[in-house]
Length: 84
Image (tube, rainbow, N blue to C red; front, side, top):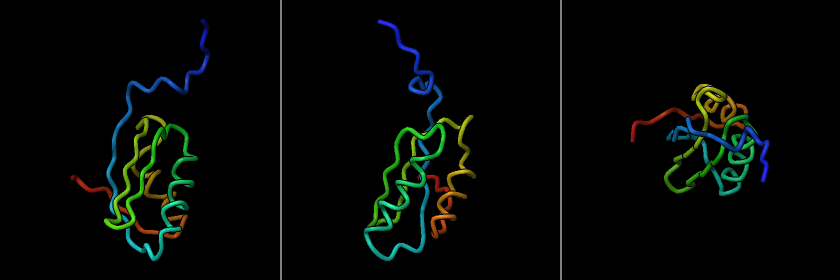
């Protein structure tokens, strides 16, 4: 069995929590998940509408926290990293 998918191995995956502002309806969730999920190095995105929390698993060498905040901003929402 040979596998040549270098993007699937992510030993340096980081779990980042962001708090967003500007959610007005549940469709915001899908919009953000789609935009963030397109970034190189992002392996998982979960947006919690009720708490306005965004959880992202990503490779920090390929996608920084600033990259995450920037793409969320482009989608029309403000986000900032949180420590909890």
